[in-house]
Image 1: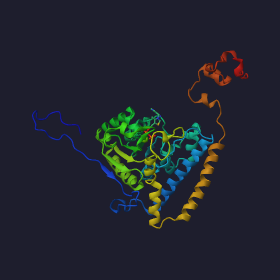
Image 2: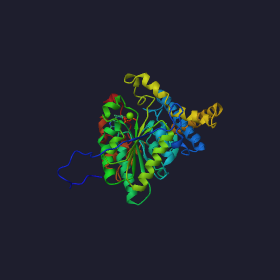
Image 3: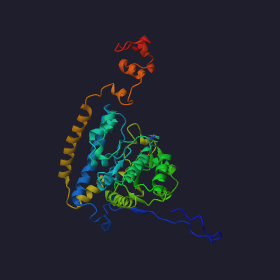
Image 4: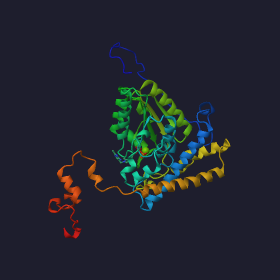
Length: 386
Ligand SMILES: Cc1ncc(C[n+]2csc(CCOP(=O)(O)OP(=O)(O)O)c2C)c(N)n1
Ligand SMILES: [Mg+2]
């Protein structure tokens, strides 16, 4: 709440504002489990399903990497190491709540029901991969850094305006918190009381830019405090901590119609994308530490401790995933090519005459041909003719 404009003129020095930010860790990489917070948070049957979902995402990541390396896919950003944040959110939120993601949230999107082939097609350059069924309440992958936070704010605002109970949860990286869009979205959501969860995946790197250049404050969570939001920091590789935080955030946001800020501390174990070579800017020793903090390993160890899992279940799972993911790749690669004229068909309600000409001739001025010189349907001249 903004301070009062009317106050005593002379005061001794007092504290204008004081706060602290909770940090939540329930299942750490050493297998320590906090019963007081973690008990009954995730039933055992769900824990197995969540582990299987993380494994599926990891498997797809490895397959997508190979597809890119063998020329069957464009650039791909691996999600490896960051499976838990979006998954925990998708697990907690209702199916009508919006998931407004960037590009490292495959796991949550799959949990919500987005087909794997949609994500594959997106990165293969087929726009039809972005045609996510409306009822899933997910927006397409956002590549421009930060834009999706404004979209989430707008979606949640619309929901509030219509008196619907749905909230939005938007994901973004540490680097995105340096974008103007982030600050505009936070400011707008906080001041207009819009029910959005701002979910930051702090993986310490924005491509090659380290977090310490990105933010001089000790946490990213405190950026939310500047806008008057409750903030929490969690171990983002701990599915229990994620579920705990999203439950808390969703309950608050739904009840108050105000935003909430979660900072999940995590790490991308792979390069930024397949177009990057992270060895050029980060130490292997750092990567090795985070490999031990892998969200899959600690979840699997806990399941084994609880006698929910064993090596034979693991190999069955890997075999099943191999088949399912091969089928998803086949669907993504097997889809019939779109009609070339689609390019022209969906922009204007009435196509301007020059574009009608282009559609008919498939020739453009920018390629050095003048469509007006060619009869419709004429063969395109070869490059050497110009
Ligand atoms: C507006 C905009 N500026 C720059 C880029 C290029 N770019 C792609 S990813 C990235 C870094 C993002 O870092 P972060 O937000 O921490 O997310 P991470 O990739 O680490 O998950 C940048 C600068 C972009 N996609 N969009
Ligand atoms: Mg980052």
